[in-house]
Image (cartoon, rainbow, N blue to C red; front, side, top):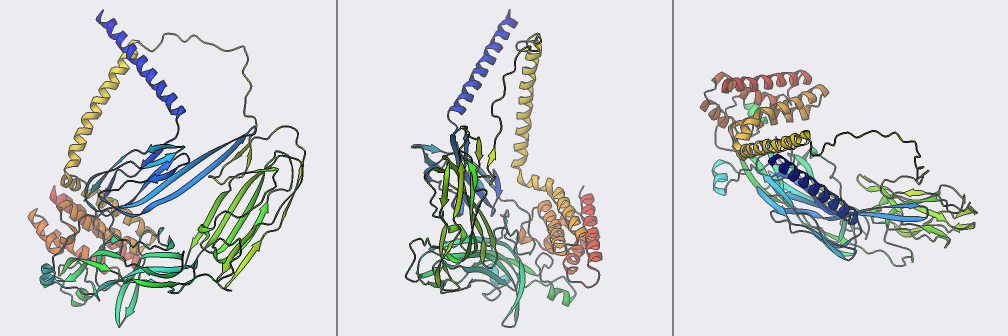
Length: 632
């Protein structure tokens, strides 16, 4: 009797869950407008990431969160896409809006990003909230000039410590703001470059104040660059290593005097200390003054600030044509229509392309007058930008046109007015006119699918309704129902057991992850092996710079994680102390130090580069393996 009552309860529970799922499904179908927030769940201190709010409908009055605990680098940057579909004369439209922020994690901890708000169809919508965990752990970076994202182990040194251990002045490392032109015309491109110059080793480049340049439309010229590109310059007889930290193409929006603000950042510089170097070769010690390989250097955090530059923007000359919308540069215009003879209710495509140099992304819709017998829709816009010294490319406007009546029609020439910088005058470009012959239709309307997102051509869909299948049907007895059977009960019991086991494993996992030092210790060998594997790929391809960077990061990352030594404290002395404390053989300690020094020396050593790389790779593998065996 008790068993039957249990079965009845389980059946009732199953029916209740089924009804609940059905009600949720109907609710989703009834209201499919969604406002969603997305961001990574975990990042490291100093990392830059994106937070995106997406609405699958039209909306306005967007109000973003305050991002407490983070630094907002840029945003909200708005994007949109739309698509149209017409079946049997019924036109439907779908729209998607996105608002993107570029955020930097500045301190460790767990932070909540509150919901954003937006109004859609007169109704206020709220996005979901997000929780982001910022970790202070990271892998030490070599002196390759990269920004230290994901690293939170910066060692701050007081002014007293700097004075006792080493000094650095404004000529050793600094930033400059370089502007290509200080008297541009409204709409004319100028290039602003923030460039770093250094005579000492650097690491952990961290932007602390990204300048907000008002009065300009800007385009980041380095957004696709994964690492800083280094070069050398000689200034006042001194050789500097230089790199472009930030490079922008700016287009003035108004005339007058405008100030390009400075950029602020911090770096960890390596300065000479009063400690005597262990390197006995004076030439080697003078040439390779790297803190990771020379214990006679000290890591010092240095704040940097570039200079401000004033730009005097000239206004455009008088006599602007009526159709002038602000485009400045050097452009060409072309127009193309896919066919000029068709039947009523069939679709044609008109493409207008503006090409040249200038701020193409600011060009709005072109003034086009269509015959009143034509149905038209907002164009889908394709922009192709080339980010070189000068912004150039093309912008294409594609119009879907559907004539509804027969006859002869003319689309007047499309005009585009801009200010030519090379000739200092206004120019008007024009396409040819388009003559279209529309024959009488057969009384039916074509099924047309048009997308403004995927940039596809107009497609004609075939049969959209299939025939009903008629008897005879092939039917079979369903047999005993699974619901309420013994197998059903066993399946439910199995699901409960799986949930309990998963909960136990997750609890143990969270407890283990809470011990950061233990996790870093366990992962030290794995991280080193991954970097050595990557170095092996660079070895085969002959990529010398990338190879030595990976080898250096593998060796020092292994030491930092294995012995929990912060980046700024890494030196041959601290490594010797840590290995001696673990009673590692002195011969093995010397071999590890020699491998580190050989790694840096081999970059500039004469002879066969591939042979040098092969030797360093073999030494790195052997020394890490031997230390692992000693520590067991």
